[in-house]
Image (cartoon, rainbow, N blue to C red; front, side):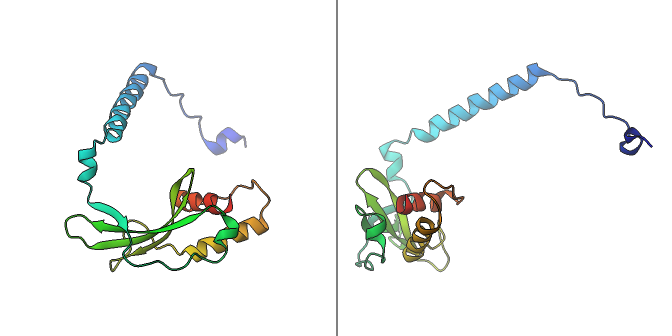
Length: 159
């Protein structure tokens, strides 16, 4: 028996209609660019309307996790609170890793509510242990697959 008998008849070839497909693609591109421009054009008044405000933490944080100095010599840790603007309730406390030339990286996160909010809870000592293990067991430049935020933390800690 031939392969054609087993697989059945060949499907008909599709007809292409490049005009409508290109027009739809161009329309999506224009709409996407407009939405991106609208989202990137936040004014200072709109920033003041955000539901949360960041402020320095009222309580001193835990000491720097063991091994942070050897991983990132120029690191500074800063504790901040994320506060609900209308109520003043602290919804989360974050530990930020700050370096001179880089954007801050959330190294620790504790929800102030009954359930995690915005981010799952992050333990700085766990992140440090993971970064040390990566440095010890992987060759320099080896790819590591991680979710975006964990990836940012690993790059900040393990290089």
